[in-house]
Amino acid sequence: MQTQEGFVQCCGERMTRSEQGLATAQLMTQTERRYDVDALRVILFGMLIWLHYVSLCTWTQEPTALNTNKTAMPIISVMHQWRLAALFVISGMGTAFAFGRRTWQTYLEERFVRLLVPLLFATYVLLGGFVDPIDTTARLFEIFPGIGRMPYGHLWFIYNLLIYSVALAPLFVYVRRNQDGRLARCVRALLRMPFGLGLLFVPPLLYGFSNILFKPWVPGEVGMWWEFPRYFLYFAVGYVLISARAEYFAVLERMRHLLVALTIIMTFVYLRSEWIFGVPDLAVGGWVTQGHPAFSLNVAAAAYTLELHAWVWCLFIFSWAARMLNRPNRWVAYLNQAVYCSYIIHINMAIVAAAIVYRFQLGYTSGLMVGLMIQTFLCLAFFEVAKLSRVGQTLFGIKMPFANSPKEAASAWWRRTASVLSVAVLCCSVVAMIALGWQLGKKHFVVPDTSQKGTPHAVFEDAPKIVFES
Image 1 (cartoon, one colour):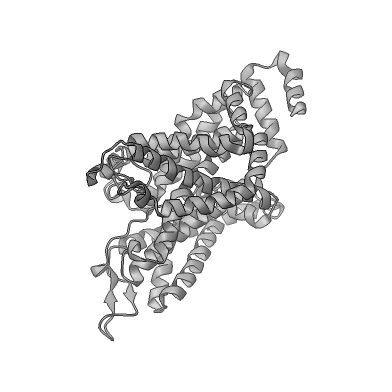
Image 2 (cartoon, helix red, strand yellow):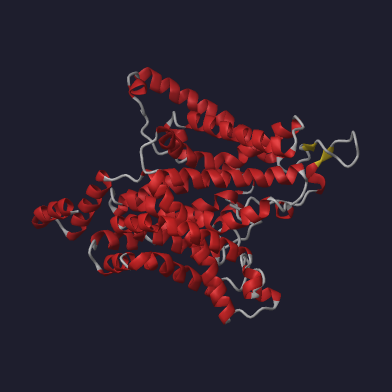
């Protein structure tokens, strides 16, 4: 840190405050890469892809709604409280590293290319928005359109992330320009509190206050209503914590073992929270519609407790990842490049995998495992094709140089040929995914175990609609 300060001081006479902040951030970014953040990004996106396939498999195999599965639901319910929250914190941390190497203008340009272009392509092409582009565009600008009207489907995460990234850009500039400003000093003071109490209990106050204001009125829907400000705060906190990364990771190391016990305790409290606090629909929100008062002492305590549960889980996985995963790994590096593209197209690949599994009449458990392997293979194979051309890299948010190895860089002919072939295969794949999207509403999945022996049963005829809730 002294070296960084000396560097800035030596150049201070010739640099503006903005340039000093950028130089310091660039130097910090160049000298430190958090491999655990990369690994967590891969793991959390992988869990999201897994959950979506479980939803589809449970729907088509049983056929029942996922919330009737007594084995899966308690696990998924606990995961849902912290999984997306952790992903937005990780996204905020990643944004801090990315912003440190760019001016704010370059940062916004990169965000629009990396987030907006894939979002629009998926919305209008992969998800069928081209059928009625006027209505799709209107719904794209609709505030909280609801789970049945959002045109971007499972890509609501990218939609929200784009809004957060743009809205918080002034905060990012302020933090970088004021490395020792009031906000930075407050964050460091919070992190230096004994036993990590500041890091453990203060952020949930922000999340809980947001819930108290917005959660009573309507149930949350995939990043909308009360979930929108909640994830906004998690994203912002992730960025701010990285501004004091030395103190932050030191506190995590000291809290590792304590967090194991706290996570177990808070999970038990969460599972019994409606009984403890007497508030209906506590996890999903909208208890006013059940006749419960919007505000009360019980509601405030419940809102804070649920966010404390989510935050303890976040700190638990962050602390042990920092301990065990902060080292270079070629598989993590590869998957970190592939995971964003895989997230964009994983629903399309899940439909293909499910169709293959059910045509072979596999059982529920074996079908789940085989289908996940097929889906993973298809996603990675598609990434390998898309990454070979600039068109694929742009449309699917793949962040890597065009010539990503000496072997590819050695031959201009190979680069051109690979690019042309990649675009051709990419076009065929996109057309195939569009066709599969059209088939989603048709009765083509067959459940092997039927109520009437020997008679194949079309799943979509009677099955309740499952929404892929990330």
